[in-house]
Image 1: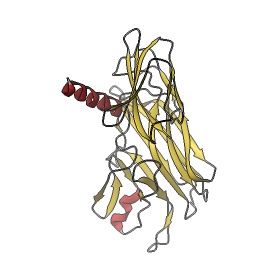
Image 2 (image 1 turned 180 degrees about the vertical axis):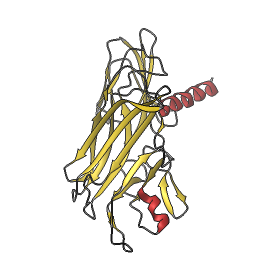
Image 3 (image 1 turned 180 degrees about the horizontal axis):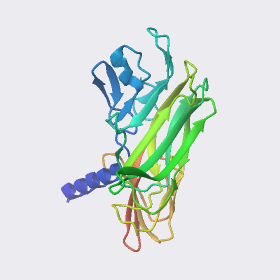
Image 4 (image 1 turned 45 degrees about the horizontal axis):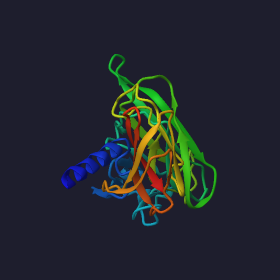
Length: 279
């Protein structure tokens, strides 16, 4: 029985993580040739192969975990050019993006910004059109950073859908500037990217929607669904049960600041698993 429970916990974690971007907390980085990249992401650090300074690097001030990603506009001491920082999901510079067959309604993350320039973030969910041989945009969202954020601040990007199709790819892009002539020294620090409000789970398009808010949360998590809730379980990233309830509101104030997975079983038999961040 213990082995079965452990296996179930692992499966739940794998399912929930499958609805999120890999390395969304920027804990894992790999040295590529002469530059470093966060696993699952590509950046303008590729220019470092030609001797340019890195514009994206692991930063030891993190919202959770050990590392965040710091993007910084920098001067190239060799050419005198001002190099903007761009960070994109994927591993191929010619065809960025990662597999993502899910339909979230929003994405959130924590950031810091010194506002020496106007930084931005954009999300595209696309689907390959085999007839026209192109990527069709299924949903998108964007945000512009006009503020100074000296401490980690939550930012949420709502996603707008342009049809009922399910996407197959996610392209998430951060940049330190929207200008042709960027301002040196502008930085944007990113951590803990979370997609929320999934319209489908495990590819089942007609599954009723469920939303969990706020996410991230401090004191109470609320489950927004028309169905009756039978049971709610919160698990650690290792799959260990840390809290349990039977209502649409669940107290989380006693939990340590970290990433968790919340499993909601409804009276009609649906089981939802979503990730949330405890502040």
